[in-house]
Length: 319
Length: 310
Image (cartoon, rainbow over all chains, first blue to last red; front, side, top):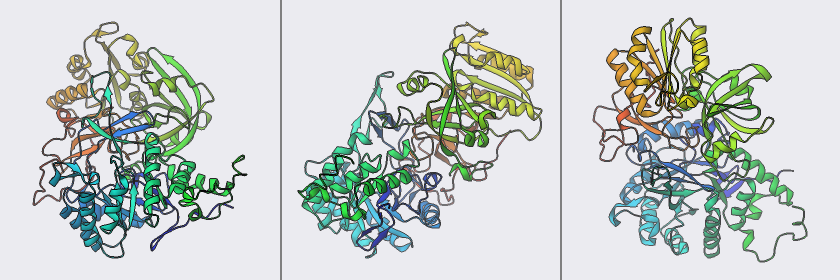
């Protein structure tokens, strides 16, 4: 019998712990050609900004070993376009929308959250803390616990009380637990880990950086161990805070790894570019992986790696 | 806007296709894959996206190739042509018959067809030429005349010269080194060909600098161009990654950064801002410092209500 993937986080009931990561599922329409968006846990949308954004010049993406470097620059239709076209479409397909928000000041984040709260159908808000902070000379919010906390407080203060707020953290910090604590103290209901790692590639043909934006964010299986460690460390310090694990998940087994490390939900990102039907596949693989280990409910394995006794040691020989 | 909601388009599918043949054609590799679901949906100008390197591949970007032709044998096969240069394409070139590939397609906006028979110039440079042959067959079926103008660096990079001579009303070849046809670029020969053939419409598939020159020249003659772009390089091919954007002017006069994989790869030549490819024009919707104009709604998708010349 396949394992029960239903996931309950706070008051949210999701049919599955598998989500799409921010910026990796298009507007939802692109991914819906290959996966039933109603059957996955939720779609985390592309980060929504107040105004439309054209993004960065091309080339915006470069392939690196087991990873992709990207600097898209948050291209998107802006909040109005999102509310008029993308959100209604997602709802019409029965998808749950975790809306990722991005801005350059706490005020922008606050305004986005308050306007999103006014429109029906927002299941949760994810705060993209990877944007440059206008008040700190372009340093991303996620690098500084105080700046991250201030943004989360602005979002939590303007969002409707029953919309959970997740803070998306960067792995590019010396102490991710400090940033996580700051966000939770500021009112975050959950955390999303991790955003991309900064990286660079040089084109050996042109002798110039491969991306027009010079450096970009590294994603994909190359960063999975970094992400798992971040999830582990924060779960250890804040065991009651729900976590969305994200970073290089490619298979059901990878998703299981994040669940064991302490994530309640797992978001698929870069793998969707490689395999647009990855959501359905990973869900099926996760069911099989759990069933093969005699696990009935996915919630039973969340954070299980933190218990000092190994699971069914005698079974591991054949799993 | 998703591929399945576009004019005349149908949803792409992801299939496991068995390699039927792999053969060398001069500098190129031509590969045929059994993929009935893609072959039956395909229209000329569309492309496929293939995962390379096997199940646990470290190469995450799909390789995208314009479809050269589809055939009904084995339920439906898809043929594509590529230069085995970078590691992903080399991996693909090393595949053999009966290997199985993960293929997504058909993707993108196809070439629009002329409503009435017309004199069509098919202009292809290097690896851009293959998609023109399925188009030529479709145009011939509809009683349109096809003239070929093919170019490349050297003779071994000219794809389909024989087929062009056999099936086209006329075929002119140019190479940069003069090893086949006349020495020079397709742009040099274009005025002669256009005048002799009394061209009504140009279908072009070439690198961006050539497309820019072709569109500028065609504009002077008042001939519409349908241009198939191959840059910026695509990563996913399905519209998810937002990597392959270029500046395109919408019906409302507003420039937007649109994805070549979803809104293209075929664009009307006069709506692409060729000089600004690889940049964000200052007046593009959402460019830094951009402010919404009071009258313009400014958020409609670029393809809405766009008329297609052909």
